[in-house]
Length: 314
Image (cartoon, rainbow, N blue to C red; front, side, top):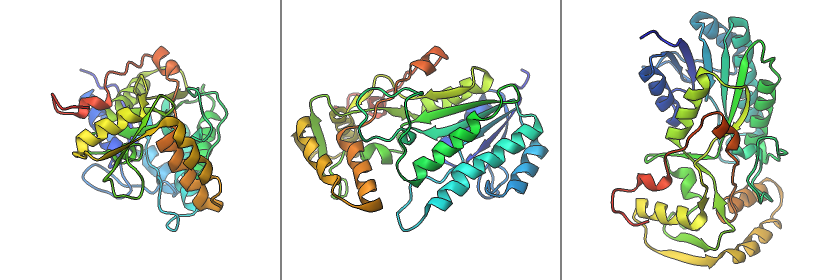
């Protein structure tokens, strides 16, 4: 079988990147997996170093570049906006410039549903809805998207994939934020009754499959990618509790969530911003409209419940 070509995958040492690089190889692609430092998965590159990025892309001459290199959410004291922007935005510009110079056909950018902002969103969010990023991470992702979408599709097709929390059996950190009462160390589940709190989540298999699908072709642009249908908060809590073996839980009417949400607006500055964001994740959620991805051939087949052993209650 002839190889479809060479794929350069940045962030190949990460939770999603390792799986994506393996999927490319299994599909017959020649893969250059790139991490922050050289290792057994391939060379290392600092995406903030434009010269190093240009040299790597010129030497490998990939057909497709998939960028997962990013700094995600860090503690407030650890990183300022400049650190996020250097990697998540300017690093993407370096990759785009190098890819254009090397004649890369397709560039796939892993982005985040955080660009929409959770607060105040009530309906399924479409790709062309207004962006309301909160915090340096989300703002850096917006600027990276803008750089990708500014590229002439006639020179290189740029695809931006917006994901909600991506999960796997060995990666439930962001799912747990939507299941537990904060500040208690994951010892007490919160279940909201009613349907007001709904969440889009994305199985890592879906993230990998759709990125692979778009590497082979399809229209440039932005795509929401998530499990379908979305989950109620109580559903997330029940499955997470079953996976973690946590039984204690408190059940709260969904309408009561309005009180703590309103209280977070009294908190000032960046700390208040972060607390509001976490509260909205837990008590209201964000739902993505994935119809554009469906029209492009995305068929979600996995659910959070698939992580449970056969016969386990959820």
